[in-house]
Amino acid sequence: MNTQDWIDKGYDLLVSIGPKLIAAFLIWFIGNFIIKALLKGVKRMMTKSSYDDSLQKFLIDLIRWGLKVILIVIVLTTVGIATTSFAAILASIGLAIGLALQGSLGNFAGGVLIMIFKPFKIGDLIEAQGEIGVVKEIEIFTTKLTGLSNKEIILPNGNLSNGTIVNYTTEGTRRVDLVFGIGYDEDIKKAKDVFMSVLKSHPKVLNSIAPTVDVLELADSSVNFAVRPWCKTEDYWDVYFGITENTKIALDEAGIEIPYPHQVELKKEA
View 1 (cartoon, one colour):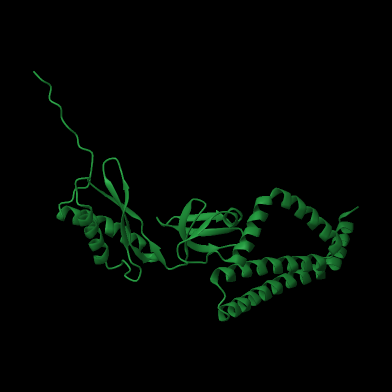
View 2 (tube, one colour; view 1 turned 30 degrees about the vertical axis):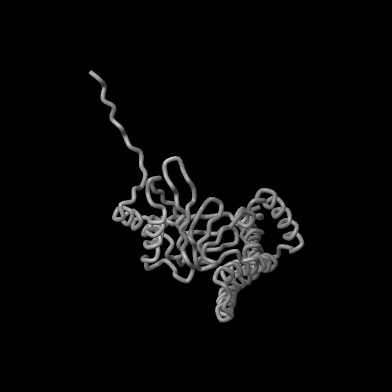
């Protein structure tokens, strides 16, 4: 076969599939433009309908991937690949991927469950899988938290949906559990008055929910008190650290001893 024959065959091939390739390219370009426009419209509709932010992102991601798959099928069909053959190939690939990515499918299912039951939303402070943080994003496979030290925490939705979730934001208030000890020789009633005075003087301790001060236990070297004020969720650490510091100062001013280990120096006899 000479050069002219190759040129003729190339020309015939270009004539036969060229229009299909051009049509496929146009369909891909226009299809992506339409998908973006549709997603913007869906997002606008969800915003007007006051959809939860996390649900908006989840559904938009789901719609985007679904439309992309449909667009790819249309493009391949336009080029001339039979949809039945493509479907068979896709099914085989899907089976192989499904077996290899069982964890990812579980995470997808977990994401769907989180969207349905809504144990938390973006902005909530939660504790799950041994981590504590504010929910930053809820995606199809993972949920992102911003940790208390401003670190990003990524939790798989599968484990997250099947485990215990503590949501500190839902109720809007939190109880701060503190324990302070005094010596056995100190006046218990006087100490309780000091603790209660510290709680009532802190500006972020709620008055609508009465704080409590009770004897918790008679320990080996101290009488321990359970000191429990209430505060807004966002004020938790301010109250925790503030009450701890103010209690030490108040006990010192009242002359009430906080037990601590003493070292006794033994002198040897001459």
